[in-house]
Image (cartoon, rainbow, N blue to C red; front, side, top):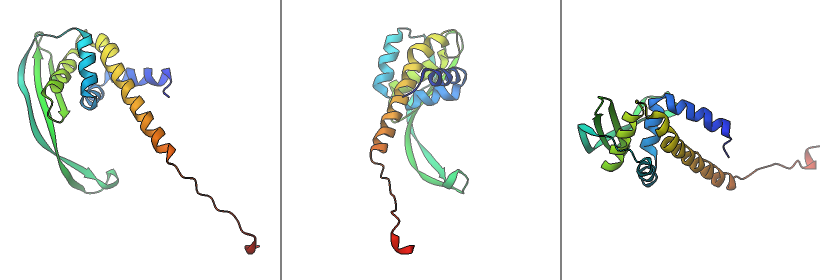
Length: 159
């Protein structure tokens, strides 16, 4: 279970770091993101710099994070870029083919750079962060339930 101080520290980092909120938006459950966005009830006017489009990217990896890079495989990504009426630019990159999720992510990215950031943080990003942490804790608990403890008994023959 996450304590309130951990969530606050993570929340503060999320508010300050564009990389953090974009990562959270990219990995969020689409249905949850749509619900939170609909509840936010502010849909800003915008114009497209790049309309949502799906494409492929090559995913690369390294053994032990330091070895030689290798191609792991391809992944489908949807991206878009928009500008708000005040000129703020937002980008959305999400795994899969959901143009709506990429659009919402781009709008949130742009609005996080405006005066609406605190409201967005409180009503959308914190609930997404909590859901992500809850999911992580459920996975950890499920994995812990399969843990096997091995022990060795000393036999008296070596004595």
